[in-house]
Image (cartoon, rainbow, N blue to C red; front, side, top):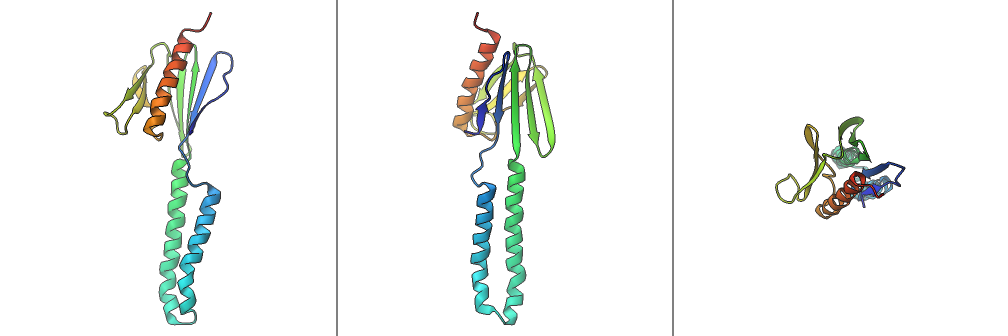
Length: 164
């Protein structure tokens, strides 16, 4: 599951979310090696002829294009959302491409809102408190956002009403 509740420390609960990775770096290298091997096979038939020099730039361009697209995909996927919940504050940090966006509010006034159809994605999950509303886990599947909304509401309720 692309989110994890970290072990709680006294008075603090933390949640980390990240996008699902279907192709790890190691798999990318294997895929590129297989692609280069398969795309190079037709070159064996034209070795030693002028046709090789006509095909070679297009094959190299295809290899570079695939490498560029996969690297771009990995850069886009290096995203981390970190939610920290204490008795006095709730903060969300969104780390992406070396930039960090943060949001903070009083947990007593924070509302977990699930928008089944009105958001940009199904089961759009937002936190509303303070001056603005922020999205949480837009990269999760609709089922995961639904489950996370219930877990997050339970964590907020537990933090607001600690057991005596």
